[in-house]
Length: 64
Image (cartoon, rainbow, N blue to C red; front, side):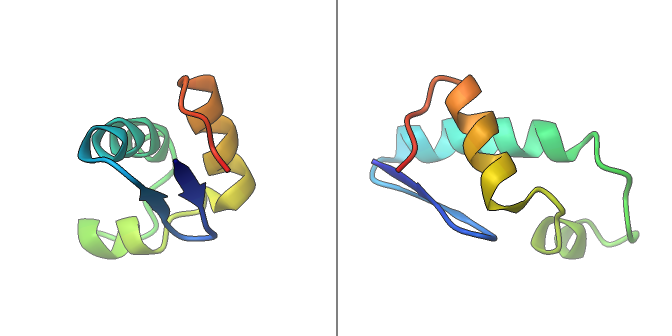
């Protein structure tokens, strides 16, 4: 099962986690960078809970 929170996604399996990570990082690559530090950008992304759920559902991952 995948649970989406405001700033992270919790997955039961490593396979789900890898799939979810690819979907979210691909979406984030289209968000304009807000700073040079990649780690900081990943922590402070602008996707939000609803957008992450939408992206994961479109990618075939059922979210709860």
